[in-house]
Amino acid sequence: GPMDVSVPDPSFMEAIAAANVGTSAAGINFAIPASDPRHFYYKNDGIPNHVTNDATFVATTTAVDDASLPADVDPDWPHSWWSILPTSALPTVTQTVVMDGYSQTGATVNTLAVGDNAVLRIELSGASAGASVTGLSLSGSLSSVRGFAINRFTLDGINPQSGGISITGNFIGTDVSGTLDLGNAGHGISSSGTSLTIGGSSARLANIISGN
Image (cartoon, rainbow, N blue to C red):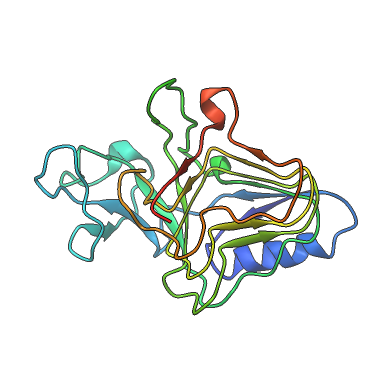
């Protein structure tokens, strides 16, 4: 059944491990509290149509929603997000699992035919994961990954290894705004699987895969 991730790490790793030992398909949903120490927003960098991803302009927040963010939020991406920062490789997902970043409060799918206005709340960052690490590896057939920003891994963003895996509504190789290059060192998606679904014909399914 569905499992909620209430803090970014290690519970995300624990949720994958729990799903792997299950006997049926599982869901991994997110309910990370506003008080989490890896809850961030962009401070205004003063540059129109631009955000800056560095220690000066990425700040922590306990705001319960976007309307409650501090007054210095960047108007070019006035949203907060939660960043999962593994310190080693995550387990390969061996069971059929639906990982839904859009389950985090405030996340919304893209509605534009041209462009992308999705608001992603869950970032999976490889900045501290070590050498030769892929963000998510999936060998469970019919699994799906949606609503994540996956960036800065030293190998690939996602590695689907079996049939029928669906990868939709993600930003792979960018920040949460979809506008900054935070590429994975290898491929955005490197696949040995078959019959994959990557994106789709409706706006909500579109991925941004860039910078890898």
